[in-house]
Length: 537
Image 1 (cartoon, rainbow, N blue to C red):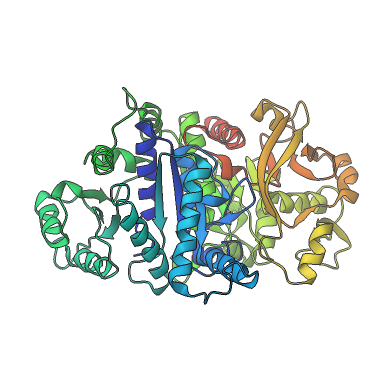
Image 2 (cartoon, rainbow, N blue to C red; image 1 turned 120 degrees about the vertical axis):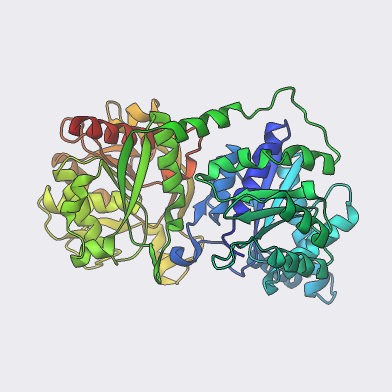
């Protein structure tokens, strides 16, 4: 089933093989017909993760980068939309030389071409490919057929791993293997036999369950890997190694470890630091993509969550995150006074007008009460709006995204984006990917990074209006990061003498935070929040 942990399993396997001395590339396959993830609703699909190139991808790509500590490329992400679009465009250009172009074999052929290109472009020794969705989904069929064909031609080099959930019904109290048996049977109907089964469950598998799965699913008991619920996703590789998965995988692929000593020590130290930290830092995340029916979906901000965890481990604290819905603050359901109990406040990215006044109220409270504040993309833009209204005297200042007729458009759409909007071109048309920022000396940003030029990933259409920069600076706001030509404002902050930490970024620093190399701005934010804790004790 979806959400069972295929992405973390893929990332963990990749990292374990990497620790054995192999160069690994991870590939995410999304079966939907969207060409990329850019136009999908985050409350339905989760976060859109942006690569350096600007490609908008599934959130699993973020986990891949975090676990492998590498930057992935465009060849590492596939969707059905990409595949069909390429095949159709090739047919239109007579690329098939007049042949009848059909789903079979041409779609699986294109999938295989891309999988091979991904391995070649990364120079990897091993590719780990995750097919998204659920076994039996109609849209998965072409990818499973491509995988089967790949195996047919390379039987000694291709293995299959099924991630399956084993329920323990409360009224029965016994772990049930039948859903996994049925999943394997369904895979068999596509001509695929899993070599390994990663058995997700609330608790660890016992030997009896492993033996039962092995018998009914035609595999070895040692190849049934226990994957119980655990406290942190970063424990997963350690947990897998209890079942010796890395060595079993290498044996199945006919490979031998390339290192004398397991390159796993730094990861273990990070996990230990994160687990043993006792002092808490209370962080409020003020978002708008939480409500999905009766449930709260934090996946819309997964990179922010993980970046906070990385930074907290670095400063030796345990971050306790609370989700506050900006729409409730806007409606008055939550009073901003509740924010006083937090040591730090984050307003992450987003689009549209819902919940915006709630976010602006939050930013005003954080600024006036000197609570460390970190604004990401929209969180920076709204901090500029709040400052313009309440400090610079521009009482009706706004972003033209919300009010195109505002008298003071302190945030306005980028000139090159206006044509895209007029033509309803929304997919892959924003300012996307890595851009250079130049930092001003003596600022919080410069101190955090320790260098003057930084490259960060963007995903937005609107910018600080250059016509208001001078007026805002005279009112005390510092634009500590700018594009190399000085036109685009990349970081806004207040000086330390006015506020312990009040900073917003037009880019998304969370996309480049890693467990072993936390992002410097998140570390600086957590340090400021930690100092607030110390003063209150």
